[in-house]
Amino acid sequence: MARKLDTADLAILAALYSDPQTSNKAIAEAVGIAPSSCLERTRRLKVDGVIKGFYAQLNLTPLGGHIQAMVAVRLASHDRNTFKDFQSALLNSAEVLQLFHTGGENDVLLHVTVSDAPHLRDFVFDQITSRNDVTHVETSLIYDHKISNQLPHFENS
Image 1: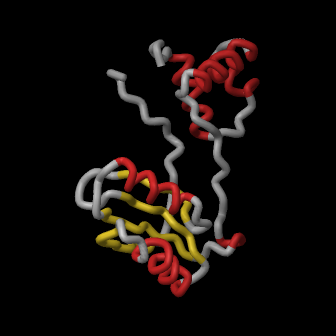
Image 2: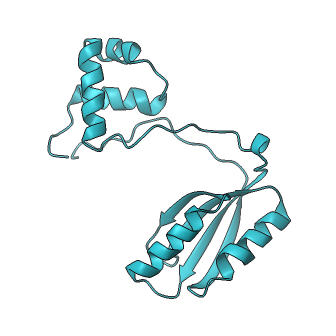
């Protein structure tokens, strides 16, 4: 992104971050700009890569996702191909909601959802520990999961 975000851009982003279903007209009114200007700014934020997409936050229970967990994984090798292969394989698993490439003791954190404890056990055994590139796995159950609707903003950015 070449240009610096101004206060109108930040206000648009804050409104969309808080509620992605907010109408362009309502955002324009809140920001104090014309709807056509708001729409153009939103399009530019998408083109510039500031807005990567819009996502639906779902209740996973009706879909059979009764348990959520974070699975920390250490890989045997830290080369690009090992990570890409692991990432590709796991992101294609129905159980994986999110994959985080991390620094520190573990290389990857997987946010997963499963139907029950045996499903979690089988997923870990069949999809993770069975891989030659995995040296350690640690699973933590998620009791509750909330997402902030407050846009992070740092003055020096």
